[in-house]
Image (cartoon, rainbow, N blue to C red; front, side, top):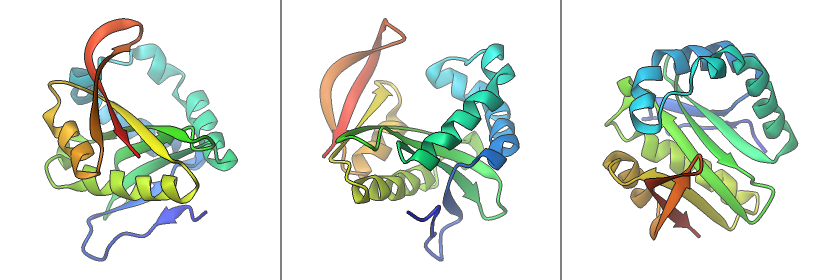
Length: 171
């Protein structure tokens, strides 16, 4: 599997598998966008940032092992502007998660990046991808819809608490 999914010539971003040397860039991205992401999924807390590099190394290992496809979305200058994670690609059903910097919103980047990552997942044998989105996150719902997901119409939980979080599915 290639570590780089080529960009279309007119694209303003590339999608690259996360590696251990990307840690500083990813941490800077997460810190820059901490408040923005917290409004959608809650704050990860200071402990998450303090133990970031251990977790990052484990994620890079998942890519090496082929158990997940964890991508960085980089702008034309090479800066990290997003992440697309497809977890558990070594089974029939994988789970999608993604986040895009506040500064990169509204340009179709999330839709295109998710589409490229899905293509890679289906190419390695994944048959279904699930995603969870809060009911009031219309932008993420549009990303999923534009990538062929359908609303599975059942509420989910997050961290064991009831939430207005809905399951989406793409076969």
